[in-house]
Length: 147
Length: 147
DNA sequence: ACTATAAAGGACAGCTTTATCTTTTATAGT
DNA sequence: ACTATAAAAGATAAAGCTGTCCTTTATAGT
Image (cartoon, rainbow over all chains, first blue to last red; front, top):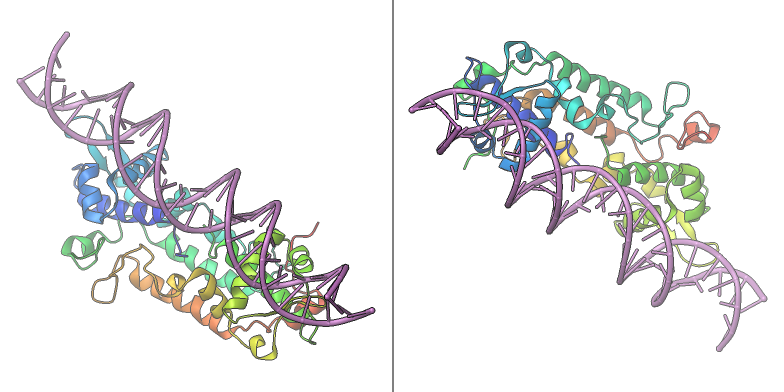
């Protein structure tokens, strides 16, 4: 099992691409995004639709339309994306799946994973959607497989 | 998404239960295990079968038979269970799902998750199956929901 | 108004995960 | 040998995730 669902992986990659590509107000079509992040086009369309409904990204229909990230959306933490797609169990759930796992009724891994979870949360809370724009522009960071 | 698959959650809980219950050579039946860790019996049977085939736990058919953990199995790290069930992507995979993500071709989250992954690995490598026997026996740790 | 464009929405299909049930195999005790 | 027990193995089913395709809606440009 990976940390994030496939849906969430595509969502994050797409949002990173949108962020650095549309930072100047330009918009990009689903076809370009799918190609640049190496994801199935129709599936990604569904994902971005959903992110749009949730107010995490913006879109415009019609000619010259497409998806884009607004200034205010640029500073959202990554945890918003992850939570919108995969829910909050990565941040709050018990590693062994016990609903009532807590300080007073801990599972064997409770203390160990408390720290892991808070690390993950901290990382996703402190990085924003727009945080990587520069390195993505210069090509220092990658959002797809090299062919 | 949770850290582990449901299968892996059941596997770990079952193995913990087996460890502290069978440490004196006794064996336990699938019915008892399923009840004590609050899991579907038939599904758990499949999971334990698989762990048995992979040599992570032991079992005996027939009267007085059941599942048990041998001395040597007690000291196996939890990572062996996790890897047997969920594979190694939790320890090695790219957070954004890129196959070629690496130091020279990093995704935006590469460095951040490198640390998270190594924490998880370290934790699962350093805890063994038998590590929690005492607290489980005294009831300080829990493997199922309280009803 | 008409046309072309591009996202939104709906329906559906394949695969994997999660789960159940039944039959088979091994073995202890008599 | 026979019986009871308990895991192993096989077949099947429900649900969720991943992915595709087709129709509808909104809008820019003419």
